Length: 328
Ligand code: 8YV
Image (cartoon, protein in one colour):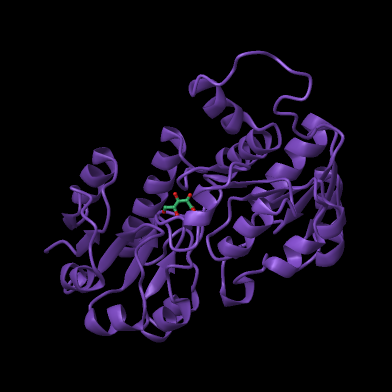
């Protein structure tokens, strides 16, 4: 019997490709070329499965051009690159890669918060530029992490990981806002109190965004929200570009409406709004929150397992639209 055909849309660990080759006829983009939508459609045509990353958009146009497609396995917990409704309507299963990246991403969220509040990259640039001639009492004075109020917007698994680090490791007071309130035992574990969005914005000394991107969360942080924050506050975005209005944020940083920001994700990435590049009080990283080798391997392995399990047992591990399975 011939093996099902799959496409691996981006370069990935050779071990993961080798494993997939035991089960599938594989075409992979191991040169990591940047494909246009037309190129993606051309490659995906005739394939039964796809291994995708967060930058590979699967929408109605792609689905209509690839009628043999049965499953797309995302090597990411976020899946805003998938039009889930269109996939469900086309009978195409979607899977993501939850859990395996939670602690690594929470570590990074905290690292970015600390680098931002304590002005680590800004001061390093100063030193490297040879500007450090003498010490002074207020040189690169930042804001404290310990004992401060940590606000978390989006209290899923990663948000909870950040809350625990703040409450247990740094004695922070943790407040959060989420679509739904956590159970009392989870709130106790995270030492976190639920507040409305406005109170979150007004009260947090440091605000970390970890909510999923959807049309409903587009520009959830814009000029009006930034205006509510403390002028001493830090904003960290490890969620998705588009949740923050980057132009409004750059203006707020320039005008010192807030003190500083740490950003791992951007609207239209890998392009970065030029105004963000020209303000000093922002730490910028290229979407690396889950980037440790063991975690990226776990994410890739879970995406591969989803494909293997689906084609061998009819049941992937982490389906996003399991209703598709019932119709098969
Ligand atoms: C991924 C992420 O590295 O998992 C996510 O949602 O944002 C990152 O961990 C990125 O999306 C590439 O797939």
